[in-house]
Length: 440
Image (cartoon, rainbow, N blue to C red; front, top):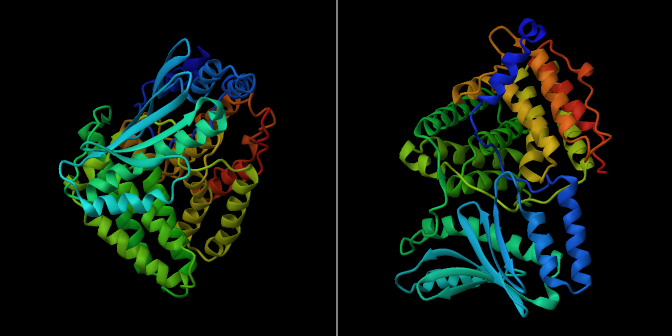
């Protein structure tokens, strides 16, 4: 009866019926205690020269049970494995002598000097793996003797192999027409309706931000414009979850701003705006192939201590104040969003923080999530109305889920402000800033 009165039964039903859509980049910084312990076991077994048993523990450590990103089997001292990383599958095997792994990048029916020159140049940036040519297949390979295949070498070697291959296969096929995409049958295509919605909102966010920037003085507001452009890039990266060439375009735009040169922000803003304008001209036929779902094993960015997250949020919060106090609420909100979305883009965050960030985005872009089929509207911007009880319940659930790994994590829901969106965003990111994320 109480569930009916307070709607608790409906909330659970709606949450269960939400579409299974993944957002943002994969983070492998989300392992429960039992998985973390498997790393220690792998290390100890290797030191005892129990190499096969060490591999058992290692591949169990990197396996994400929710996505089944690793296939592994062993028979005595011999075994085989597969790792999924975006558009690529790494195939590997091991025996009493060593471990070998290979991933196919593309097919090259005819020899190409420009392609080989590109691969030769990129070889210099690799530490563990190398590019190779096997008949008409362009490959990447990694191998190790059994005596040196410790968990750390395996992790960083296979990570380099997997992440570089996942990025380079698309770029090589785009840059060289002689190459053919291959070994992508495992990619899961998303429904056309979902692609339509993502394209519509991609265009909407591009238009909204560029139009807003057009009303601002490029020199006086250079700092605020930079925040708007970077927040837009991170928003697209997380909410649209692009792959392939579209992902590369977003990374290139972000790279324009953070490139270490002496150019003023106004010039960098101009270049980013031009790239976003090019992105806005992309047709559905160009964008749709870059929208698909994949399984991942490794994050493309590294974990950071929570102080890095706190400092970024704190810096954004301080830079937001002038815009809030001078009646630029759109810019102020985007700066606050930048503070946490920069961390989601640049760091491999603990899943607890990513879950809170997901909630933040569901509140700020409730119409987008509603269009995708999510039943709960957490914020109504027309009437400035929050689903307070559901938001608080979600936060409590997130903390309970990760309590074992982060026992001192304490998000004070009583400190949240529901007066307006800017006040809520400030209070929400403030709580994330001061979380105690020390692991058990």
